[in-house]
Image (cartoon, rainbow, N blue to C red; front, side, top):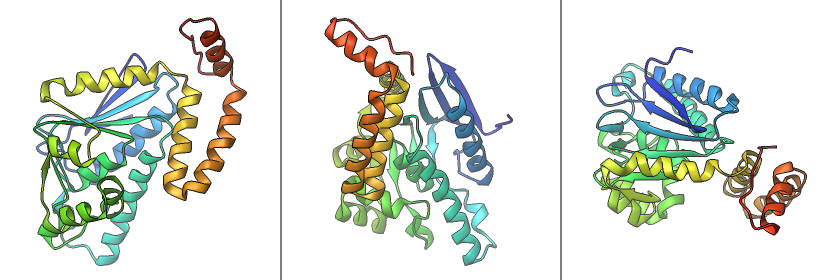
Length: 258
């Protein structure tokens, strides 16, 4: 698989997926297509239990490739937005946890990408924002929908309408980032978190992600129904039997992902 704009490394059941598209890791069509391909490969790789998504260099993703905006019609722009939304929806519903390690500028489509991830960690120095209105545009890859769900409608409206950027520290304060770390500690902390998750059984991880996603995507009642159904499904797994036995025997469980 040729991924000239991405770097993929797998170690200890953790995949680190780095966007490497100098100078600013812009999300052009090629990068989006490669992300689709990489996600397919990682989803099918039984050795991978957790994915860390980050950027190479000083940028996470500085936004879309503005050069691709010239000379296209409104209908073509809408199709572009739908394609980006489809990819980010896939990340949000991905059966393996995706942790965004926001190492630098995370703007426009970059922030929309980070918001689609299950967990967001940010460097204190990172800059996050949706500056689309500076171009006479609005966010198109889900930003108007995900940002209010994370920070509240009023705060999201202010950030979108002013194009104001926030640091990683403020992102943590308003709920846009889940944790904030010094730049040099970010990937170390992301890997430590990923390792804690990877110690759990793969089936239970997938079922938990599915239940959480259903509640957000379809509503509280539907989420409860899905939770109950998946709780029953978990009872049929070998890992459940091992987990209960280990608890009763006061030892660490040895999950086999079955």
